[in-house]
Image (cartoon, rainbow, N blue to C red):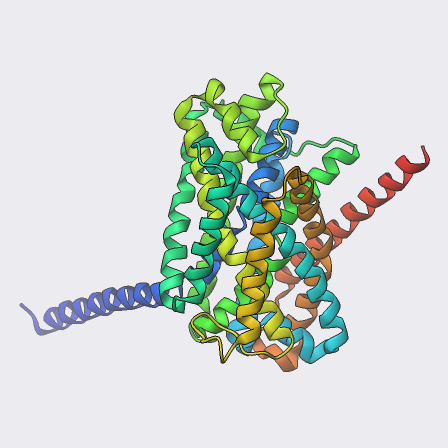
Length: 431
């Protein structure tokens, strides 16, 4: 064999080995940074989210499916910004807001977040109670037991162990795509509804659209994701893999949302069945789509509710402690992070306790919370956009024109929808 041919063969073999080594190295690096993006996006499909999607499908059929495409794109952009800020600055969002805009502004934002997150936590324990009631377990038993398990999970675990459990919980969201297939939807019609926008010029439709956006791009997510990225130690050098983590999580969470809407649209909406909760949806699916579809829907509700009941109080504790400069973190002993532990514990006790109050209008709390999320979101986005475009803070990692366009567009649309909702509500009062 000629020497030059031997040289080319050897060089090619070395290049292939290096390429294979780099791919394996990148895969291991991705596993190392994976978690915050996937977990944050999936927790978004919590009890309140599942209820919102179920009611959207039951009440409006497939008319809101088209909104999931722009919502997914906006979610990716917003979540990526939070991940990038955490990796570059090494600080959480509430920490940055306090540093750049002062304690007073931070206080009012955190107060609004506390109200929203409390309502969301009530919704999660309500989801736990509702899902297990379908299996014959009363709320008086299921809620206290799950509250204690949620509390032990975070206060007695370490960050890596807790994150692994959360990632396993993400896998069980596959219950909703399976239940969607079991409902046997007309796929051509579903795909057309996904790409062709439909609109109803009434307050109920706009309110549901705001709720859909508010439950998909929730304010708490931006705070939790950035805190989780910082605690995981993601740096600017490994940020590209963290971005992939965010993108995968955002796409998967809205695929789940798609199947929830589809399941309820092709069964409940077409049968004229009115529902108010995700539990109603699960029970109503049994005679229409089969027992297994209903059970999978119920199991998915429990998994999502338990998962989110762990994350939302955790997000609240992170956000408050960062905003006021207190020590925080999973695995931190009580003596080193008293405020963190008290906030986490208080959210669980209040959230679980409210569910056990007889005749409490839980559905109103859940839907109201999702709408408030949608109203609060533009304010959070404005702060994020101002921070991420700060040259001194972000340097070469600032937003590009496309990111700014999508993020500002999302903010403007949410403001416009909120104004429409408020104005139409005022007009109803004087009608």
